[in-house]
Length: 235
Image: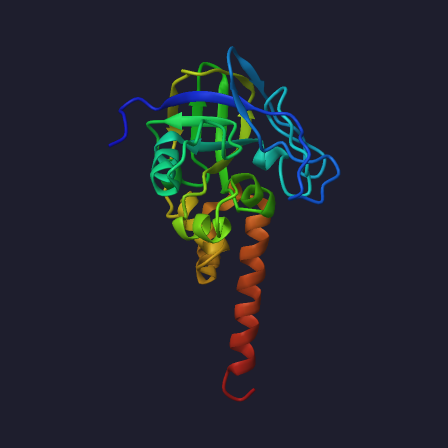
């Protein structure tokens, strides 16, 4: 059972390191470690230009990571604990490349557009799940990791910054807005990976939806409509 008071367990940042698991010349910033004291969080800029929303944190491959709609990556300690048992190894906070390791909040079932007040100033909005990549698989070095991570559908959440501010370990997390739709982090993750027939339904999340997720949903909807037209009687 989750604790009654959601909070930030640790704030994790990391620098660039070389790896064989990406073609990005700058390497990867996936190796995030907990830090003490406050860290400034703000909008980093558009994807392809902006990097991490946390001061001092590195996002290397801006083709796929970083930017305003993926400014902060969050993973729940409770979910890391489950992975620890399955993988039979210690998983310290930050090991999944998350900026914030949380406790007391069900990240998997947060809804797209849900807003979190963290501490006094910072306001974040949930945008999308993390989709596993080759760098993540190489970093964890676990057999069939991408397939296992995808099958579990516990991907953690990306958030955008609505109001900048500082964050530190121990800050309370208050859910100040929870939209009235079905599109949770888990739902959107499954729609984009293993259950693509769900894609048209993610549009219910409206403007809070990550632009790339909206584009996928609209393309799927258009293809489905074209297929129906071609197979209609008289065609």
